[in-house]
Image (cartoon, rainbow, N blue to C red; front, side):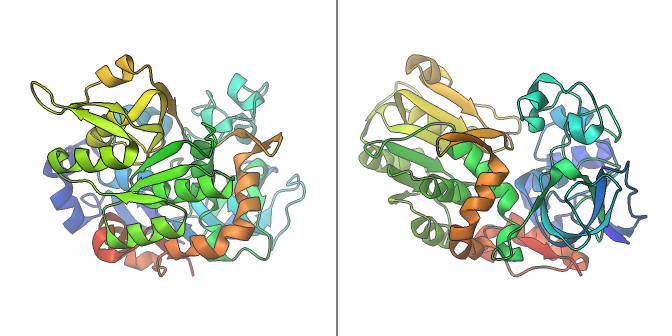
Amino acid sequence: MQALVYRKSIPRYALVKLLGRRFRSVYTCGLPALKLTDVAPPKLPNEKWVRITPKMAGICGSDLATICAKGTPYLAPVTSMPFVMGHEVVGVISEVGEDAGSLHVGDRVVLHPALGCEARGIEPLCDACSEGRDALCRNVTRGDVSAGLQTGFCRDTGGGFSHSFVAHRCQVYKVPDEIGDRAAVLIEPFACALHAALRVPLSKTETALVIGCGSIGLLTLAALRATGCQAKIVAVARHAHQKQLAIKLGATELLAGGSWKRQYPAWARVLNAEVLPAELGKPAVVGGADVTFDCVASSRSIDDGIRFTKSGGSFVLAGMPGMPFGIDWTAMWYKELNLRTTYAYGPEHYGGEVKQTFDIAIELMRSWKDRLVELVSAPFALPDYRAALRSALNTGTSGVAKTVFAIE
């Protein structure tokens, strides 16, 4: 079968890192670290696993960070190469093990990609998995499959950018018939956004600042509104299509980036803040948002975000950071900000009970599907992966929030 396989080498990683964004936007495939090639379909590790034929798969920011050497080597020990990418997937079960529970051939499903203790056949469960937080599993290098924090970064499972991959029964969620494939492919990133949105409750008199209106920022906006948030939500968007989508998904006001000399006065007016001239460098800011969701996680967005969060407020890091530098952490200390970070999903307090984020995402997608499908691109075929990567990397040109593959 054909699959997009990632094979990292240190020289390629270093060169792509050195040449930076301009080179990545032109070449987009990491000095052939990513290649479309023929591979054998992965085997079911045991009778509790199923085989899934993908129908549609989304390109995640973490995929782009890996391909373009934008991240750090921190996560390298919890991956196993070569691996087939793709963890935002909707597909159909094509084979089941003898102990696959309620799953059957022909079921249309989405993937919960975390490879925790249960998926790895490890007992007793680690502390995180016993609390339902398998995304934080401590055993991601042990058990029935190779190292990998998620499907799509594990050598033995395969991934969604292919014609076949395998998943443990605990990783599989059935999709209701009324949710089409274009909406279902968003369930995994929507679950991530819900995990961020539910971290800090907001009253209707408070203000949230959402920095970045890529797919995670837009889905965070949607998650806030879908879960009943009535607060004022101020969104920072770069491109015209992002601004339009942000308003449709519930942003109260929009802000732009740019030079801080122009940006900061505009932000201060909207966020009820005061900019205090500094002796050197960027100014201090008092006042600001009650909660800031940083969906970019760059050096600049973090620095701006903590400056424009009010004293005693919360700063939620929802984007995937690399190795940010040049951040003045004084505001974090001086304002006694609450730092929250969000990775993947877990159990959430929602609607008076504790539910898994994926269950909430599927429940809310029933009513939000028509608005959220506007984020999804016209799908690309796997052989057109270079064009797909250009679309995902250059959203200002492509006008797309979420680039996806249709697997045929």
